Length: 353
Image (cartoon, rainbow, N blue to C red):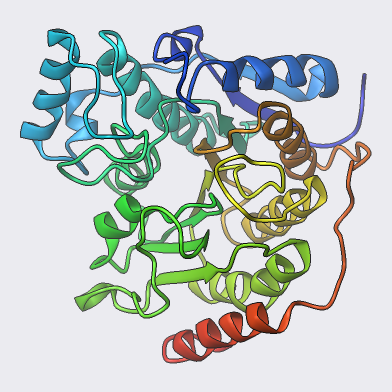
């Protein structure tokens, strides 16, 4: 298959499959289904596969306490089975977690370096995921916070002053929020189901100190679908990004707001994800010279997640593949519209909305 459009970097390593648990929703089959969908449904001439390099401890320590990093290593070495009720480990998990964070860093370096002709957009199919991991605590299937490591490294290594993270996972990225909530150099925007795990991400949580106003939470009720997400993007997310003018756009890309996901209750279609990716790609083209890195987070309907990712890549690359399940237009439900209006009212303190 040969199409016009942009080539996308795909960052993957087979060792990502070593961290797995047969009865856990966050298991290796997630990547196996993605790999099959990439092979069967994407234009091979528009995908460039890149091997990640493991993160160094110095990289992880940008956002995690060294004592915590050492405790994860020791727990894996000792044969411990879980770090908390939800977060399992196997003996290989520490090294795989370094490689997972390294995937985010490899994506960062890919889009920031190599001059003209470089890849500008990368999707790193890394696991374990990361956005729930706190500075000194594993949570929600996550060991190290991959996207936070990439954001901190972007500032350290490339001197960026404005990095934006958009988290479209169905669960709030508590670890990412807490990492940067007092830092105006990282804008964090999260759409998430509420109430739901981990119970954070209130509308009123807008950041602390110098970072006040640079934390944007959009908690949405179960049943929220394409039309409501479209309102959130048009009324809140894109206007704030356009005012912030990021130099790099990072995405915590969880596909668990898909309507068939077994761990959530949202109603996004493949077309809804296509729309979100298209809107963010356009924002990146306006402000970051197109530079985007997407890090895999949640998504637990195996076929659904894989199909969504094909459409995300389709949007990022402007490949013009057919979109299965086009954006489902409807009038936003009243209770969801009221929640969005609450977010807008709160954020008007800081942004022109």
